[in-house]
Image (cartoon, rainbow, N blue to C red):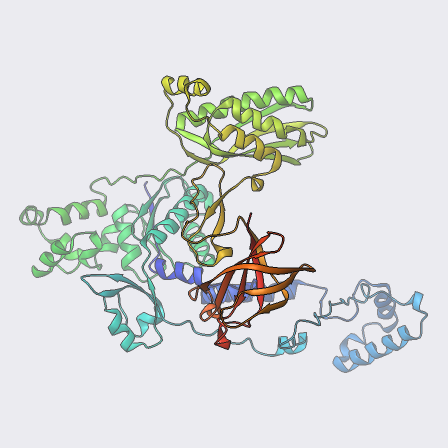
Length: 632
């Protein structure tokens, strides 16, 4: 019997924004996480915490450890009478023990570990301006502070030359804000309203990741039900997860741990599950087999996934509920309500509605397992060549080229030896990949032998097939004047020196000199520097301060300065070139000013200097001089 689950995320956009805006400083405990997920999970966490404390026979609040020699001797001498004396007798007993320990020599005193005590690390003396950490007793006795209520959050989209609410959080809906309402109206009702732009592409990506996770963990047949739902075919897989109800609760728990509000309904058809998940208030709804008609009867007519025009036409005839449509004779409605009747048949199981299963993208893998472990270098090289050939064939079958490949060698002791190679351009040439792996194979330590060798393509790009004419031109590139292919050379150098050592300087869109230079991939297209303003051939990573600068204000270049202990006398200068700060990056750069000068000393050395501030307003800079570059 077919069983379908419909998972709907009614607040997908809001939950995704909450996750992106929330950056917790530390991991909360289980109870705090459960309180954020919901009252049911909070109660479960508190119950589990209480049960764990009750089950522990060794409390960690200090005092004597029950298994220590000192505690055993004392318990044997005192008997059972001291246990029943209460807290007063316990304090007296602890005082006697402390006095007894203090009277012993230092080498005979019990260790803190035997006493069940823990030594805590001292606080950082330079931490400063932080409230002192409360002790354990006050932390346990004081009630937990209530979390600050989150500000109402909505997303906005453009509709008919105005901005309207696309999605609203629960706090915003409680204040009367609903999707479709104008943003100006919402701000008038809620002054502290937080408005974020709608991002349907981000919501779709999150939903696709959740669908891939469901296909790998729960059931292989998963379909995305836009804009905020998933359809899961549970036929034949529910018993693997403890039944339908337990499986549904585990799915809801997974969504709660990821900060997503979710509802799920399980029925015998796709239409029934879809309607029950979106139009029933319960987070979990299990429809019994053959009970779809009774479960759908009280739902509104739009639960059948019909167009708004058909919904309005049905309501004009008095058809408000699905039960009203079921009770009507089909012959008079067949011509006017063909689409609603087709949807009704699908929801009741009278007509089939297949699920277009989402196929997760599987990585390209070539693996070889050995009956006997191998350790010889020749054997490893031969097997590696076979794996690379297999990997190239599978890449060609998918129309992909490898950019990042990992070689994993699993030894008999379960330790893994990994090697990574990267390619500047997508390739599936077996000889080139084997050459790159052979340069790194010497780092593999086989130990007592290798049981499994596996090649995994971590990153792949689409690669079109190459014709025989292209191969012939590439072979004759040296003689025909065509540009040679530098990708193999770049890959070999990157394997030897590291990928971070190879780059191409490129200009970036920024007026601040240290931000106007960046690094791109070796074969990427670099942006040339603009020729309007002269720039030095070498720019220091960080400007260095100059000492003993002699210069006049406000526009005079320096006449003398000291840099790295050497005095330079300026005989020629040009400038100033004024560069202001980028106020959109940092508030401190709102009024910042730099005046740059090109200067030349008596030995012919040319430098690029600047002064902080315009020389007239103190808020623009402190009038300090710095060197930022050296001309060739």
